[in-house]
Amino acid sequence: MKTCIHCGAQMDDTSNFCPNCGTRCNDQNDMERSVYQPYEESRESVPEVRAEQYPMKWHKFLMVVMIISAVFTIINGISFIAGFEYSEYQFTKYGANASMVYNAFPGLKTCDTFYGVAMIALGVFEFTVRNRLKQFRMNGPGSLKIMYVLSIGACIIYLIWASAVTKINLLNGANLASLGISVLLLVINSVYYSKRSALFVN
Image 1 (cartoon, rainbow, N blue to C red):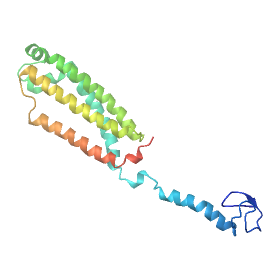
Image 2 (image 1 turned 90 degrees about the horizontal axis):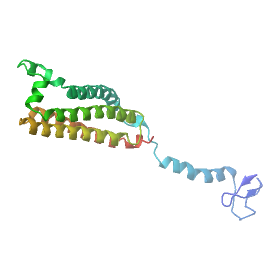
Image 3 (image 1 turned 90 degrees about the vertical axis):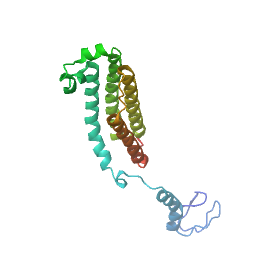
Image 4 (image 1 turned 135 degrees about the vertical axis):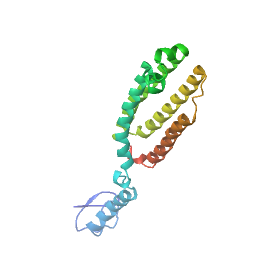
């Protein structure tokens, strides 16, 4: 038995015309090609997206860097909360410590605590973002952008706040350069992952 390509009715293998609709059906192979060819063409018309089509070396490198960065971000946050940054050489050589700095600038303790908590939260979030990217989650690239924006925003708030408290301009060349690097990484990763957005479908 063969099937009519027009109405799907069953017909004898020797029949050239469908008894139901009258469609000419000469050869079973022709019918199968007529039935399946549009399906095969439709499959071929949709390109299959594979990770191999894109260079992913930066992605793999970023997965390693983000672990290290998240750890250091959390440590940096703890340091700000505890006032460890004032135990560095540039302060101790003048006999200063965290207590003396906070006595001189009373509002700085609150500022440092805010920034420390923000850094710890960002470090934890960075682990989450890394896992989303590694698992090719749909929200991975978007989460990475949010992470950079939050990091840049927290740094700007801290520098402005601390400058107002200490009356010292902390928006200097070194800090602005650090912010510039963060902005550059935001742009680079946004462009990189936007070209690979089809891979993030989980």
